[in-house]
Image (tube, rainbow, N blue to C red):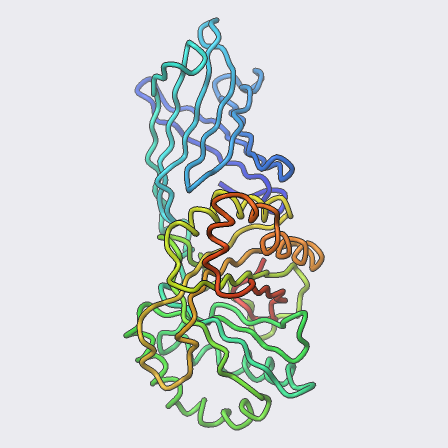
Length: 365
């Protein structure tokens, strides 16, 4: 499978080992942001010059994709249904069913359990524990810190077990540097931080780094909002030290603040109602996080009293990022139930970040 049209379509090449012999087929999928729906076509290799099957069309809601089409089978009209479910970073379940009576009775006739081949893809979820770090810098010193950070601080942190997920220029605050760091768990976090902040490289460059900063205490400690909702990245794709600055899109983040811990009501509401708003704005959801409730057991400050839900998304342009973030923050979907009820539990208005990846950021649009 590979993506097309900057992620708005994809195609896969299938080999089907049937009892009567193997054959091939191709699935083509395309997304329409105006309707929030996907269409899926199938080309059967046994009849490569035949007509494409009518596309099934539908959408994902609460992690389940349901798609329908009207077709014929052995000369008789049928209703076709595809269901994608049980989706994780490494697996999914697909089912096909036919109905001869317009959807009153369904017969499931094809089920596929899909698993990722780790020898083919090195994508992995980074990480179960994530820090969102926002630094306020002295005027005009951001580029100094970025060069210092990218040249000296990435490799040593990863050598002790920290994942440097991404580093960014805040487009709306010229003296703000934002970065993300991940860990396997809270114990791994403590050990990695103890090793890094006691290392020769930190002791050598900490004076120069701290000299660029006014404040480095704006830190949120996070965990994936649901299984599989963290960042899925291939560490081998980090640009090298010799890489050039590239303008290949923007990362947007929306931070929702709540009075109490975020529960499934909001995560379900976001998936069913807010996430489609993002897609209509040409955004692609990357990850969702909530506050990690564990106590901060390292000396670096963390905003421990906050209860947040954060969504990260990719956008092709800065204007698209601004429009998508504004929609997720203020869209009229909030005026409808259960949005209005959920909004009453918010501690303060949502915050948005428009982030331009730095030269060596692993996380990119």
